[in-house]
Image (tube, rainbow, N blue to C red; front, side, top):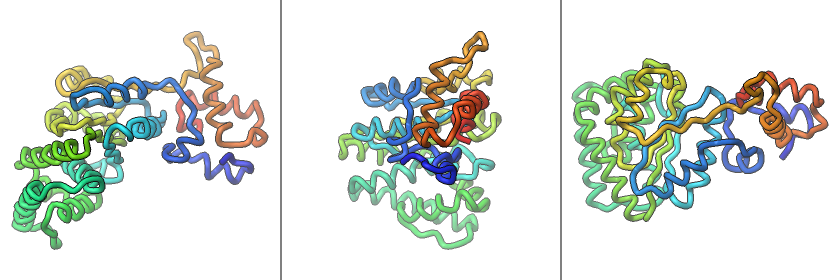
Amino acid sequence: MKAKSLSEVYDIFDPQEALIGETLKEYYVRRESPIDRHANALRSSRRPLKYLFVGSRGNGKSTELNRLSELLEDHLLIVPFSIRDKLNLYDIEYSDILLIIAAEIYEKVSENVELSSKLSDYLDSWSEKIVQKENILGLSGEVKTGFSAFVLNITGKMKTEATTRRVTRKVIQPQLSDLIYAVNKIIIEAEERLDKNILVIIDDLDKVNLQKGEELFYEHGTELTSPICRIIYTIPQPLLFSNKIRQIVLQYFDGRIDLGNINIYDRNGQLDPEGCELMKQVALKRMDQSLISKDALNLAVKYSAGVMTEFIR
């Protein structure tokens, strides 16, 4: 519903909220986006494609990823999550990400299909071994056994408890191949039973700094691309200017998805009518035109520099 008063504008124009679900249907304005092309590839390819998704901060990446989920939800089992909701972005390791991927895939798959008793027994046995080692290493608090309880308990503490992160890494990293093996067993069985391939979408990894981005994707690209499902990772934009980005893409990934800002000016410094009109439609889909003068709207478009979050703000 459009804002009909200035007080309603504050609720509808939230720069921190990506469009999703009903708001995506109601407020989204079609823009030039690589999402449609890559949606076809993800839908059609027999290989578990791995992509890096990049764009400037606040240019609408999360909204486009939500749109991708909607485009593919009938064809793939989508496992989308924000890494910022699960982990501490100031203290994050590749093994943390893989553990969260395992937890999210397991949870999503369990909502849709019951895993075989053989696989469930294997996962429970694996988690019990980890729990025993964690207790030996002195992790405070009682950790329940069983894979489901384990991932719920441990991953729930990873974001806020430094001790949990430290101890879990000490146990998980030497046995990372076992974790990846467990994840892949879940993927294989789930895709076979559901007759759907799995796509994991990991948002907000673009918010780590360049040094951490290089460490994760250059030094541990092998591990991060080991799950045998389709995966999209967002990455920090400065990584594009690293001398490692070409090696990262060529060695580990099937390509890079680049989302550009909206063009407000052309190369000659003149206003781009198409880009300006698109930005105006973003506003007028959310608010009654009577609430803003043409001059004010034009000024907001110019000041945004084509960055969606800045325009909304």
